[in-house]
Length: 300
Length: 200
Image (cartoon, rainbow over all chains, first blue to last red; front, side, top):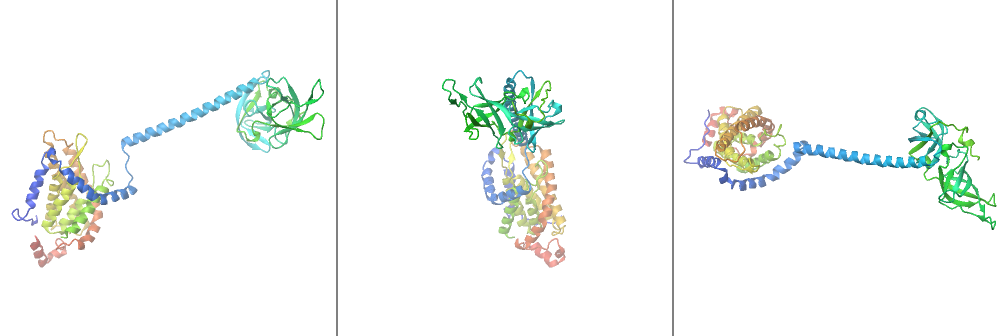
């Protein structure tokens, strides 16, 4: 082996340094507390190099994930997923609760007619028709009555196939006139008949006659904005009778007719062409109206 | 040897050791390559023997001061000496071997780095194992595993050594080595050998 040429102990402090280091290396740990100070000093001196290098290295070598961090991440993801499921379940419960309320309200109307209420989403529009995802499979037939929320009348099924049906809203321009009654009080005992036709702006417009005071003989207008207007039209199936057409928006004098006649503007509670879900009132006995199209009906 | 240049080189190498080596560690992190050992071997190959040994000792001390040991109770402790003596031995090994290799050959440099790292590791493990015989020694130490880790680290150091061989070779003119021909084709020159002996 080649000579290394290190100086002899007598001329160099190197052997003494080595001996000292061997001694220190074998000291009990309790006697080495002072080394920590030098270690801190070394770290301080080296940090200006090590820190930027570590930061730069992290760009290319991402920090490995510790097992407990992975567990925490997994638990966090599970928690978030469960939270999402809970929120979705709450939304579904709210939706179903609302649906039950609407269906209950719809079922309470005209209880003499047995209908099955079938909630169905609106999948699109075809011309003036709404396309509803409920068809013959669900028992929908032509002339089935469709509501928005069980009470608000939307229209009538004009065409039906296996899985979908086309509904003509009562506010569609091609929809015919419909007969209704304006409920003057909460009980509905005092009514005023009216004939309504779609105005093209999501309202229906029609005539009604003022009543006369039996004593004075003067015309009395008891119709006010906000009063409910319900369907009462023999041309419509029994399942549609007394469903809500809308609320009185305003009353206008009819200059053409004069006398006791007035014009009433009725606005449905929803924009009928924009509803996302409807309730199809499927008659249990699959009753079919003799009326061919809505446009043909409307006369009392 | 230019000790200022050595200090700068050691500073950068230790900074890389602290900053980069853990990131480049394979597996669970028990095997960590060394940026310091290539510097030690580089100095050992080129510097006068006494300077090389002192440099090795200093590098070992700095490794000891930047390598905390894990205590069984969860804390950490610094022990001065094991790596200092290990590097001292590695420095001697390099000095002994430098006459046998072509010092500018990256492969020879890499092989020397692996062997020097293994020497330093074995010596350090020996010291720590001796310490672990003390009753109540709080350092968590399993000699077999640690020795395997050190030898694995020595092997992995070859990657760093191979990468560092070129930049270190480029630094040679700035390091102020009194002679640079030992171990190369210049060593055939009798005058060069005589000059080298004078330096020793």
